[in-house]
Structures are given as C-alpha cells and as structure tokens.
Image (tube, rainbow, N blue to C red; front, side, top):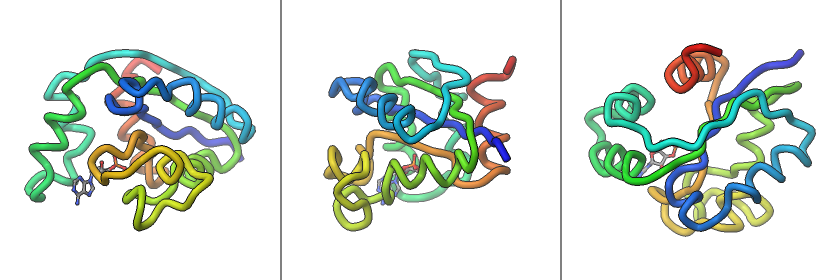
Length: 136
Ligand code: CMP
C-alpha cells in the first residue's frame, strides 16, 4: 500500500550541495516526489516539527540550526515510503549508527548535522506533512 513521508534536506545538506544526491537516491529507490519546496523555516514551524524534543539538551541548538538557512522539504510517496526513506537515511548518528551506503553514513559526521530528516511512523508523517504542507 502506498504511503507518504515527510523528508527534510536540512540546512547542512543544502549548504553542502547534497539536494540532488538525496533526491537521486529517493528516486532510484523507486519512491516518488509528491511535493518539494526550498524555504527557510521560521521558529514556530521548527518548534512544531521538533515538539517531541522540547526540553532535551540539544533542543535549542536544533531549532537554531534548522532555522539557520534554507532547507528543502519534500513529501515522498510510495510503497513502504516511511521505512524505505529511513533505510536510505541511515541511523541518527552518522558515525555510530548510520552505515556506509546510507545518506548519513556516506556524508555525515556529527549527530546534529545529519543532513536529512524522515518521519519515523505513519502518525508522525501525517503530523509533519500538515506542518510543512498544510494545503496538500
Ligand atoms: P532528526 O531525525 O531530524 O530528529 C531529531 C534530530 O535531533 C536528529 O535528527 C538530530 O539532528 C538531532 N539530534 C538527535 N540527538 C542529538 C544529540 N544527542 N545532539 C544533537 N542533536 C541531536
């Protein structure tokens, strides 16, 4: 069954010129783009997106970072799109968890600057797509 997931190429990924690389991997996997926008997130959007991390030690830095430059927000769809993109992304920590061959494993070093975000469940995907693409 087809499903949708929210993907962000975070400001570090845009700054490093990895947008095309990420999109190519999504498309080669067999997933489709349903929406795509380059934008600089405002604080309210970032705080909504990362609400579950409010109170954690890295929360303020994370919101500063994600609002600090342009990012690319995408809705990606296809069969098993949510776990399929998380497989492409690799684990949250680019060195300790992500393996070579994944986006984070191939291009990342630090956990904060881990290049991409992908929804972690159907509930998160629905919530996050509404935040970034309310008219979709
Ligand atoms: P993401 O998949 O977007 O979800 C939450 C983000 O918080 C995560 O990617 C990382 O960018 C960031 N994050 C998670 N753990 C840490 C940490 N220990 N220190 C800094 N940032 C973190």
